Amino acid sequence: MRMTGVVLVMLASAGGSAGAQTPAPAGQPAPPPMTNLQIIPKDTPRPQVLQQMQNIAAALGVQCNYCHVIEGRGGRIDMASDEKPTKKAARGMMLLTRDINGRLPEAIAKAPEATTRVGCATCHRGVPIPKQITDVVTDAAASGGAAGGLAKYRELREKFYGGQSYDFSENGLIATAQRALAAGKPEDALTYLQANVEYYPKSARSYVLMSQAHMAKQDKAGAMKDLEKAIEIDPNNAQAKAQLETLRK
Image (cartoon, rainbow, N blue to C red; front, side, top):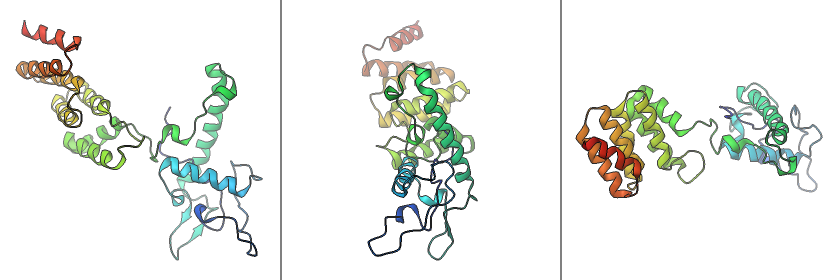
C-alpha cells in the first residue's frame, strides 16, 4: 500500500513554528492555545501534539512549512491556515492510517497488542513522496532516456544512500533493467546493468540479465560472455549454466 505524495504533518496550529513551541519559562506568558485541531483530539496536551508533529515531519524528511504557512523572516506565519493542499490532504491520510490500524488485527488474525501498526515511516521512509526507486528512474528516463534515468539514480544514491528511503541494493537497478527489457528497450537495460556491476561487481544476477538484453539485440556472443562471467562469480548458478549450455548448441 502506498501513501502517495502527501504528508501526515502538522494538523494543528499556534503562533509560531512547531519546533519553536516549547513551554514558556517561569514568569513568562504561556504560548497561545492551539487552534484548528481537527484530527488530533482538541484536549491533547501541547507537548504531545508538538512531538507528534515532529515525529511525522522527521518520517517524511520535511520541515513545518511543508504544510504550514511559514514565510520566513518578516513574512506571514499562520499555523492555523488550511490554504496549503498538503495540509488538507494530510488530514485524510491520518484518517486513512487510523482506519488501517483499526482493521489490521482482524485482517491478520492477531490481537491488537500483537499487531504492528502502520505510520508515516511505513511508506515514506524519509521522503515526502514515497515512490519506489524503479518508478523514479523510469519516470526520469521517459524524458531523458536511460542516461537521464541513471543520472537520477546516482543523484538519489548520493543523497540517500545508507538510509531507508530507496532500495540501493543490487535489486534496485536490476528491477529497473527488467522493466526496460519488458518494454523492448534492451539498450536501456544494459545501461542500468552496467552501472549496477560498478556498484556490485559480484552481482551474478546482473550478468544473467545482461545476457538476456544482449540476446534481445541478437548479440549471441555478448550473451555468452555475460553468462560466463555470471558463472565465474557464482559457479553454482544453475540458471546461468543452463542458458549458456543452450546457447552453445
